[in-house]
Image (cartoon, rainbow, N blue to C red; front, top):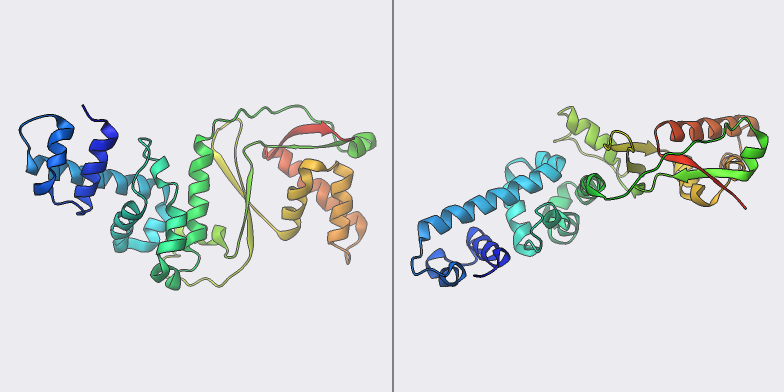
Length: 267
């Protein structure tokens, strides 16, 4: 008996019309039977096609919403370019952002942010399935001067930070409100922190300004005092005391939302 992978590959090929079902005698061998049901093969191939469409739609709902009636055609082309190579259907969708970037010039001409939107959606899916233990530990209040110098934050191990050339979170929010499908968006640099909450296990998404992105990128190797100093450097025209107050509030917020999950000794 041939593997399920071989059977699915043949039926997917039929669904994509790369292989006429009448000539798919290989399917006869795959099933090791003398009877070949062409109509049944067509039906099952269509079901596999529906499966691919459903999976891509569930992972990339915003892309599907933007593309509307063109979505199914895009999915079919994606499966032609990157045929499924894993029984885990979610994994078969992982190369969609690459597909958009490399094979959808016509779509990108109208919506140049589509590759970044696909990346955003895949990252959320990836974090939902990541097998990482997140341990939240106690932390020392930053009002303790010694702690401020000798301790630094411990980052959530599922954290991923993306910098996009378009305002992806704004686009997502507008699509949620049903307002973004026809709107044009100009380039506008944006930063997104995405991670899984240790208690709800849901993916949390935080939009960062430029300063917060810089501080977060340096947090893993810095003390709280280092981060405060860096914040003052990033805001040379502000009162240093105000800048330090801002960074302390940001650190407290990151702890409260479990983007930081504890502390570590520095030095």
